[in-house]
Length: 261
Image (cartoon, rainbow, N blue to C red; front, top):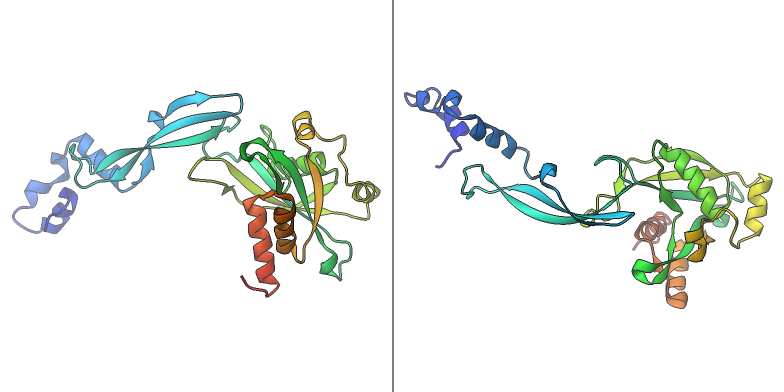
């Protein structure tokens, strides 16, 4: 049986050989490596390389350590590489980049069949297609996620909402990027005159920024009941692509309606 030196020390501490395995005989580098091995795998951010950068995105190559009992340097680990995309607006590894907004228009509190999910349709150059998404946007520096959601929701859809709750950060594509987002649930008071007028006008509005206007962003009201079928119909008839989080929401609602997979 082959034991790690520290385990061997514990195993032999009552034997005549215990003096050969006392920790004070281990040099600092070896003890540090043994301590770090308990934290594997992990990224060595001090070794991060920037491959390229634009105004909004940066491509990095990460170095991360994995357990390797056959390592040649005796550290018990070896180094691997991984490329990732990072938003240049990200404040820190743990900071939240964006908000994704779930807002349900309730026209009759006693009839959920009249509920509608507020979505947006827009052209996305990376996929060269129009997409159906939940409203979303970046969080400004120093801004709270709830405030960012209310602001972005009004900019993209024209509706005035009130934040009900904010989820912990979730990750959109962790194999590609460290971009994170909170899901913020908003309440839209349909008795407000501004919201009623906005509901009657489904066209573009003055709140859109230049880039969003150029890409033809428009708000869509999709029925809460039967939303998955509605998304399928748009995919087949219009060739749109559906945001994964929205599709997951629609599938979850269908399961909740007792219709299964």
